[in-house]
Image (cartoon, rainbow, N blue to C red):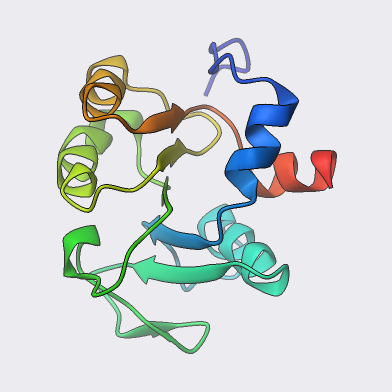
Length: 140
């Protein structure tokens, strides 16, 4: 993915405020320890975040129950963190909007303006082309 992809225009203070939210559903979380979709949420979990894995192909990751979709989660969700290719995020975001998270976070290399606009119209902040782990380490 091109390093020249634009990213959102949030300031560091705004990103810090977003990172103070602790309930994080991770769409596309992986069991493979070598993938960012595993070690990023593991890092977040180790740093006080309540991680909720979304992966229809497995039952548990890091000892936590996996859900098939965001709307299957019982409780509230602050952030939906998405590890899916840009061309696959539209249905994920449409689904996530039903859960009314405060933030949808598209990981580094992920950007889908159409899907992001839908989320913004629903009153949800959208962070894109940023890594939660990198931003957390950089700001905390």
